[in-house]
Length: 168
Image 1 (cartoon, rainbow, N blue to C red):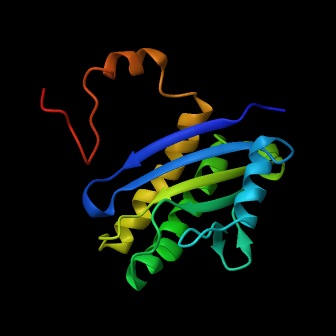
Image 2: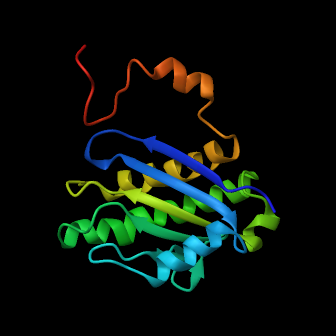
């Protein structure tokens, strides 16, 4: 059984950027247990769901979409369930088609995708594109065990993210 792979990716900028964290692991291991537990224990505003390419066609490996932000309004909810879900499904399928996720893993593993959709997002096509690329690259980063320890040590004195950059 292969180890659990944890990946992270941030794609795009502004309100329509995508931030995706992925966990890929065997269905019979801790990732499978976490996947089933999360599906069976939704909380208010955070209802995990199986990601589909279209109705009745879940992506493989079976992917659980977990939103990082509760739907703020109907538009935000539609972006989560629509454009972001489609992007995550396509990105996982891209990783499968490219071999980042193997054909064997498609039936033996699961993915948990923790997904940020900004409540102010306003471009569903950008939300789709950014989530597609973010899901694909998060799985690739997990497969490559990125970031490297050297990169973490190098960046430790200059942390930055879209919401905060230290001034000194």
